[in-house]
Image (cartoon, rainbow over all chains, first blue to last red; front, side):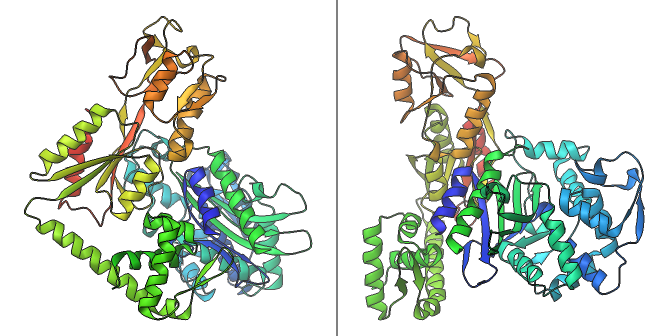
Length: 290
Length: 290
């Protein structure tokens, strides 16, 4: 069982960590080093989404409240409000939507500021997550990378990680330095979310709907080339990290929570073989569990 | 008598849950692994694993005894380390070289080992990158010069050294001393098996394909075979070996050096016999690249 998953990762040139369970029978699992705590990259937006919805349930946040984000104060990034030129006024729930569907860094950091690191940590603990830590958002992550690389801006710092001719600065991929979780904790979060154990019915529905609307189909979803299979996920990409955690639902309703976390040997920004390997590993896991 | 090998087999089987994978992890074949397990179970007087179809699972006795086996193996490893440190003849340095390392560069590293650590005894083996990484991880090698990028999984690694390469092509294919990759048309590129270092190999061929859309590859066992195929007018070899020549084969510098040989020294954080490994490796890296 492990040999197949290991073979997929070896062939793609990545170190991989994985956990997959059937939502109906969570005792059966496919796993590879599932308890190792790995830096999350943008997958931290998944626990943040769950934490935000919990605060809505508690009445501590109003999902319709509007905030205005100025361009100068927004975190850089390729998608969503990060890419906009002008001030944006947006509701909290739309921040969450943009954060989760297009991995919008600006929305995520604004939402993290509102939720707060301490409040989020307490919520994640109450969810039963013992190996999940949201220690900082994307802006702080990029600042740390800039410090470690000595680069002038975030793009130059990321270019250092992408350069196959250079050595990665020490500590860039240390789980202890940033937001991190184990693959097993991610599937636990997904399982409890899907079972409606953590949030009200309406917030549970919001999380599921939002995650089904994620636009990235090149990782988990690439392993299931059939529209009858539904994939709700959240990807993470930072330097050589390539991740996705999500729920795959087969026609007929059988559903599987899967977290595939990888660190590629190559640094290139675009690594289609690694993306495909994440889908392949997910596919193998589902076939073993179904 | 319970031996170190028995303990290795117990722990590897518990981790891999698969006879073939466990055998590979221990560095033996499957029959002696099965035999060793039966012997250990006889010595202990209880069954440690349930053998199912394709799966191996710890019995309750196995679960209970596993921590003791781990502690015993760690103690034996510490004994080895202590013995190495006290050895009046100086430490034994077991150096691994990837087959792509030019003979002169490999010789320089081995010579530097001898001079950096006075009194040390140096032994050298050649093996593919994936095998070297594994052997350094399990302590069978002290350090190795391997291809970059490769999955290193917890090993320490020095900076990336870039060695210039030459194209060896059948005489009269091209007539300039310096050639561009796009000029190397028609003939396949001689490459080693991909599984030896998938990430490095993909990077090499992806770079080639950028400049040269056709021609393909031919898998060879070593540069000797590649050179012979070039002499026969059947292949192109890209080598970092400054001494690899043959009648009928032209040596050409590649314009802008697009395919440098990327090498790194790797070692294990916990198993190194050097008191200041970083200083030692810096000097060895210098020898590798000079």
